[in-house]
Length: 229
Length: 375
Image (cartoon, rainbow over all chains, first blue to last red; front, side, top):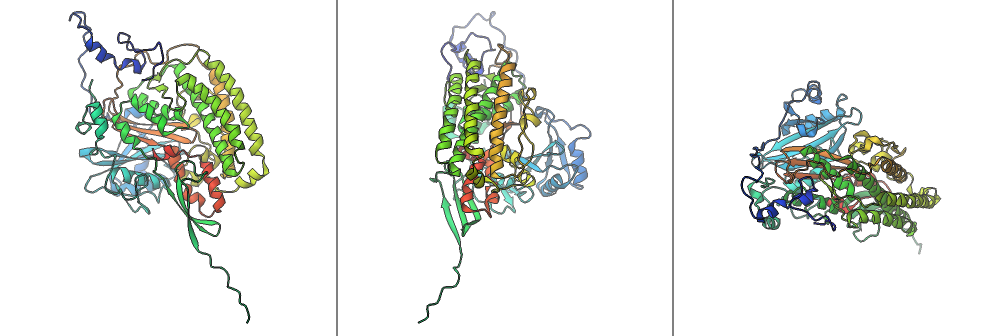
């Protein structure tokens, strides 16, 4: 911690201090002699945190309706995550429909999503591997987030590098890190990893960070990101 | 005996390795160029020497610790990287950043843009054959800016000064005065580099009409930042999808006409002037005092489950952070969409058909940071 002189974290300070200062407070408080129970501020009962992000249906007239018109016959599940502050509609498509959806998104005049912002892989463990595409339209000023999910045993997703050249390196990186095979990619060789490292996928959750795990005394395998008090 | 002449020389494709020790490959970047005579027919970039698994590491760090890693990823525009990360977490946690903190963030981020573009101008001049003169013009300016960053954050390179919700601590008392002083230097340094390079006939001949990319190509290849604007797309996240307090300033978005290497240089030079203007406006509007962290700052940074894609206009383009949280104090998945990585992916198609000597200029005009490419 790099606090300057005179700004040492104070265990008794109010929680409005800087996050750096506030963080070690619980440990310090535990060592001080316990106050009589009556004086102790009663910690409110902990609310059970939701495990899933809340999802709401996009309002009428959203981009998913345009997409349904532009790509007839494609079945998808459209929703919005409130944390995205309403800016982005997400559609979940099956990988068989991905090429059709992406082609429609790029070429249809009503959508005109010509810009692939970002392509990410996410490892959902029991629920398979997910690829997330962020699209943006410079003319219509709207965005769309497309998701597709595959299983570990059959981690094949059609490549969209011919539709969006920007996806070329993103797909290679995602193959490196998650082992997702992008079918039809012209040059799917390791990009960030060594050339011979084709069977080890660092960003999958079954690759624990052993050393950091030991330092923190936590087991990432039993629920990454679910820190306790 | 009659001497016969050989028929015309047979020209074959020849692979040439360039880098990683080549002075103009910017960091540990290596590329294999296949040339036919002087023309490039193929190019294979080799990246990944600096890959440190940052995204994996950040999954094991809580939301405070991750900020330090942002600096180490984008070491020429640290504040932009920190800002994108903080914005992502703040949006998930639904935190309102106090106004004073927002202004200080903008001032520092724009100063960071200046220092980063000074670095570009210096290195690009060297690529163009100005020898070290442009470096000697640009580096003192970067040093002046870095002195302020050091006074504010206590570190010369790895600032880690932004915090989720605000700032780590208050800026020094003489901060406003110091920024004014440094801006005078920066304006002068900008003029010096302008005089040295912009209208220099050799420099212009060296830069113009190479590495052209049309607007449609730039969009298809996912370019961003000055690379995209030089191709004629007036797109700047500060203006078009304002974050922080950028909607309160008047500034112009410079756009190129031809999408060549010279346009990219011109766009960056004009951006520096606009940055100086933004900083001056921000200093005027900066609230003299006030909190720099939200009043109801939680003791531990825990986010609800959800996902967010936050983006800022970094000096090299769109710096995006795709953050997926399952709840708790650590990211479940954090993807850094680094502008250098996306811009560099267009290098192959931008370079094919150009002359070998121009490959150096085209690479230089991308202004990549290799740590940012490899993450």
